[in-house]
Length: 518
Image (cartoon, rainbow, N blue to C red):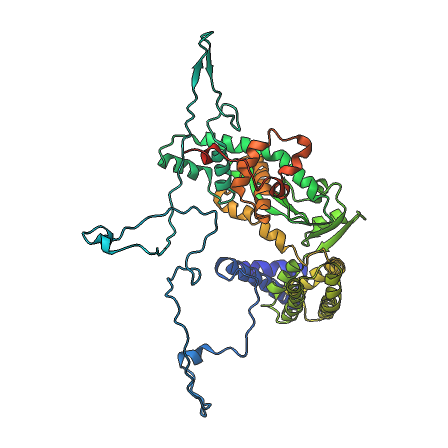
């Protein structure tokens, strides 16, 4: 029935030309098959974009299983014997031959084992000459501690006046939450994606009665304190000469009863390995212009048209394109058209050049010269191949390869920008790795009930992701900054961003009273 409907529709639009109807239907069937294959791959297939190339030197599985006949004339062999040191027995869960590995910050609790020989009547016949050490990794359930401050009350003998020692100041005046609890809630929720209702359940299991609304209130108030730090980090990012920008969806706020509103995070990655997540209810170029106000330099992005519209009439902006996004078009097309393999091979050559640059540690002019001598010829071959393929008479505009060729050809100038600027990366993969916290968290908290909540997620993830990029422990950072931010001069707020904080305060951070309790 559906085929009959399509036939009637296309017959009417092509004046009942049977050949035209058949050709149109075949094109639509091919397009639907492509969509079906894509959905199957998302559900059941390999998600990695890594290209698997058959190696002719690799042994066939049937040979290993003994199904293939043995060679008629086997090569002559000889027996070789040698001696080697016997390896230390290794447990299946050991990382290396040395066993468990851990850093100096991991606490160690020593358990002394007694020898039965030292307790009997013949104990004086033995003496301890050494100790052997074996280690096991242990874990305690999430635990909470109540800090009890015993403050003396004094009486002035002369005036009979009573005096008391004031309680230590807290992050929130009059609050029962220690700074360690606030930092722990934020790290658990936004680093390890543990929703507040699960944290509430863990508190309840530990014997602590605390409402979920209280946890929500702690989270919101703590993030609001961090807002000025993110603003300072954002302004510093805009001073970069090369920026990378992308967008990722998030449901935030109610559109109508039973339906959440579709909104967007726009991560912006600066050249000093800093990241800010801005948030918008739309995916248009107006938000890009608002967030990048005052920026002058190279904007590296994917092929989304909003970036093209933003940069088109701004001479101070040079737009660069991501090769990884270009490659994905050809990767989707290679199944339906083997000719796409040539594009994948050439793009792979560009990435091998970048790998050699990293291995050699090339920077500046040396990096630019290496790209000019090795990557530029490959790029020229790639675009020449694209031009040749577009002349094919058998290639329909609706086919995946045709769309890939149009995409690459339309963005040729932007894709070549990195070849003339050593500071521009070949792709936005560094940004995509950093923004994974949003999709990962989205699978746990699904959506944000309010738009304010979405903005709060952007603020805290801007700091926590930047902490990861600079190898700063997020918990230690938050414990320090939540205590320091209210007293720090506003003009020097940039010092509390993770990048600067690491250099100024990381060696002697402010601690919680929990660390000093006995």
